Length: 266
Image (tube, rainbow, N blue to C red; front, side, top):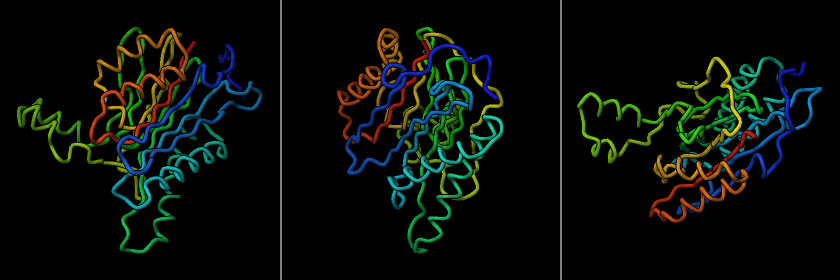
């Protein structure tokens, strides 16, 4: 049954939601994303959005193929399974993971497994839920402040905790060769870490939601926060364009693939 609490106009592409990609200095674009209409029967189209971002693992066979397959398997499974929103998100993630596992099983035993990070956001104008595995960040910009919402499943939080405990310096942590090593990813194996909040997050008019791959971290937190403060007065497509323009201006010599999905709550 549709949620009677859902009010307001449907989301409009480019105005209210948009995404952009930048290959960076990599040979291939191994990110993949998809927006899908997640409205329930009886609701207007685009009352709810599903955004899924996959960042294929470059050290593994077919990173671009893995992200494409996993994202599409996720979207399909979300629409095919009944149940609560959180149940459907988890079922879709498990289906995507199993799909990658089935494909990997058919590959030569000498080949490394296919893999991808996965971040999915289910959003209406009133609230949002998400599920994520890996290090692809989910941000909320509200009242001039930018906060990361989902867990980072790389070794970065582990190293930052060692800094807090005085076991290493900030410089040592920043330069650590395993800083970006993932503790959990969609590889077809049992998922060791999954971020799935128990309750939806209530949204407010003026909120900007950003779902991205880790290439966005070329921008420092403060720079992205300031950029999004100006974004309150423009459309989602222009915000996505501005973020990628800022990343291009940095011109990092090892710039990673970058995907930026933007949803504005009017």
